[in-house]
Length: 184
Image 1 (cartoon, rainbow, N blue to C red):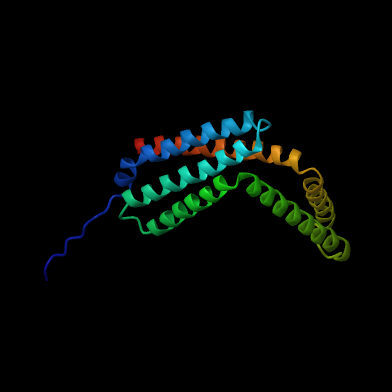
Image 2: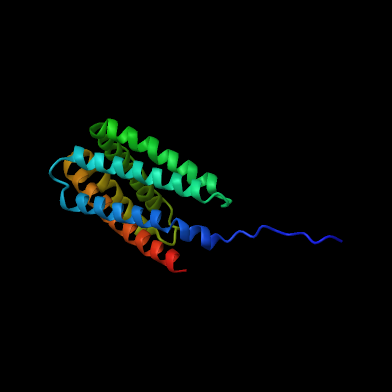
């Protein structure tokens, strides 16, 4: 019986070659997050465009990671995520004011509806083990939905800060992961 040779693929070695892409994504995320945290009130248009730019950069980086990691079985997922990030980022940058208003409206409507559903579920279903929590959570969610609908400018500024905090944490985790991959 002839001996069969297999081309053994070392995932760690391939990841080590592209570690700098993860580092780049992390550094950019921290920088954009910092801008969002410390500059939300200046103009929501700029903040939204920064988020759109972040989406494009993230999409491009994910796309190139997929291209360089040609042996990965889930490469197509990275390509898909990259393309979605690029397309959505372009849409956001093309109409930043409209984008942020739509996001705020969607969040407000969702929180209002979901809150009312939870509230009435808690009131009408005495078998729920978390009934009192559900009632309180439902009221809070509905209240936050109303606040966004009534005062969208304030909540959009808070939203920008929260996106900034997320981007900083995401960036720090990406930087840590990049060095862990490099040193693996």
